[in-house]
Image (cartoon, rainbow, N blue to C red; front, side, top):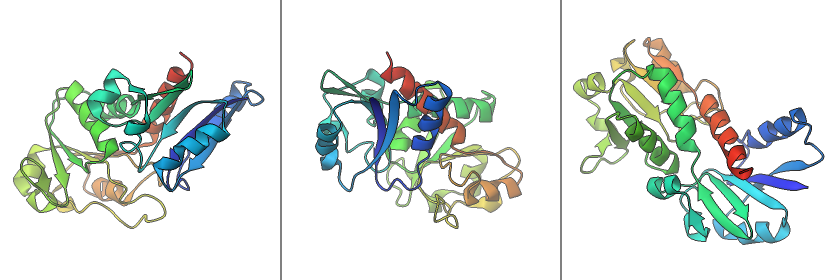
Length: 244
């Protein structure tokens, strides 16, 4: 039995197991492939997973281990090394090779949302997912500012999001977990009153399908996109990597 899976904590919000299980069924591979959840309280437990599942050929990585897993890997793809975050690992000959397929999925959503028109972006959050988004923006020559709770240097704080800053940055991307199920009543503290129909909001969260961040944007006439498309595209890219 070919085994694949997801490493993270907690995994109650994850859709990956259902997605790949349905994919295997549609491909007639249910008797040959399985996708398991590995909910690890510490990334140091990864060795145990590998020992207990010798048929493991690859796995995805989610919050909070996209950066923590890197020291445990044998090598990184060029993209993962440049980004500094891993969400896909291929197990080959006992070696763990890290990849980043988030950048692929994020880039497609950005293209669809912006229609490839010039703009400037605000990236909310600085974790592993944020790094992939920033790489996708760089690949498209989209200037951006990083926003965190405590701004420093070129990093803006939420208090720095003035009317002028909001007017100049039409694309706003939430890479934080704020608003993710079950805490659906949370949202990044941006000045939503300054949003206009010229703004575009991209939330990497996919559960719920419409977050409070997105809903507040829609109320101001902004176009919005959830992390659903990105999730599917990065999953398909992972499957491609595992089958090279």
